[in-house]
Image 1: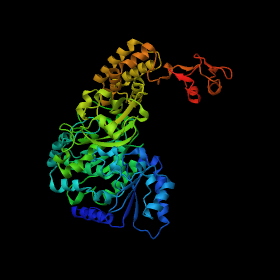
Image 2: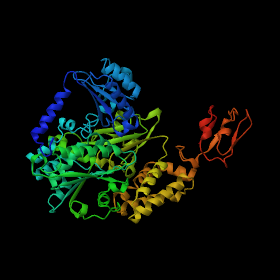
Image 3: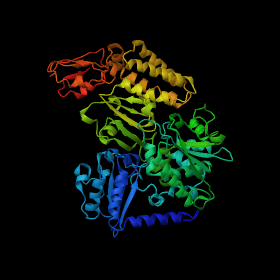
Length: 616
């Protein structure tokens, strides 16, 4: 299609054409989860096997094999779904190239679905699983449903209709008013109202304004933004164009980390397609509005998730935060008014404009409307990407959606907000999830990482792990963050090494509170949260480390003792496998571990076939 010829009527024609094709009685659509999680589990090989089987049937022209994004249930990747008009959707899980060939032969060509490759041997769709029953998919509505590299499929699901409505039926001021009325708050961690942020930039007069999508997702265990970019990239382009129209910007940048190659490739494809159809560039949708988007790759610096550091990086400078004010809405990229929103925030925008503020306020809570996407991981039976209405409780997410803790272990804590968040214990699992409630109990929403821990996790070691991350990621500009986080980490290192003292506990508390109060940006201000929350809720574990020189969870190696019990059969396997020759004893006699030589590696415990070695 020639450039700048797409109109509202064109969008409707494309939508009608795609839906009509999909509705044909003999049409078969095979969806293959080709997000990063699926690809790493072998989805590329599965896709190749499906295509190879189809190639053997040149007379079959009613089958489409479609790559799509992550459906969210990462536990079951690679996932293949078969859609036929008038028939129930069939979901196959843990698909291999061999099982893919069998599915093609028996189901696609033979009409006989293969039940043994479904979840628990049942013909239940993903939406019928416990994992999905309490979810509300708004941001993720297209992920796992469409080909992210086909703009026509996005259009068939009302894609670019929000942009058309904004450009052809609304003034910029009306767009901002709808965003304010919706109550959408930033999903990148800060929770600042999106419409208010846009209203700050709109009245500023400048020859150039910018919209930036912050896709620099750096939290350990977080993959929300990546999944949206991989599964529904056009939603972000449409949202940025709407935001550009609202504030008077004609240029947008997507700042995405280079470690997301699949997301980058799909964004590049989407931008090219949108330009070709006149949905980016000059006179978008036949209006007088010009808007285009470029991609900027980040090098993986966590601090560049902070907006002023991100701006510096795009400008070619070292990614370091600066004092505010001035705020980016007044003085941002290259000194021009700039609005920065993260991926998940933007993904809500087209649907809010299309469906209205009241629709968005129809789920969630009064102060936190809408949904939130979480990357659910750690010690939980069902890991993956979940989108839930604000106001759901943590207990529902962990036990109803995530199906609880594996191996009969006891829940201990859940870390929300990544390295900037805090640990939440059993007593707070009934608290409704929203921005304010999480802050009130010493954690935060963050971008959406949610890591579950069980009784085998040492909370002192968890705090040390997150501090290790923030020390590495500090830009070094301000002393409290640069030096303070190092000192926190050193103290935690001493404690987990058995060299801690009681005075260290008060020092940790005081130092953490000072860093929180005096750091320049959000990274430093929130870096002490894991320390403060674990000190508050698990003070007894800290005391056990510094007073008793024991790790109750048996995690911290320097505090462990390995011992051979009286029932040792003297098989000699442990002594032969010990890397430092710390175990001695005669054949068929009890062996002994020399504690002065033992490096606490645990090899003896692992290789003993009779359970005669214990650690405490």
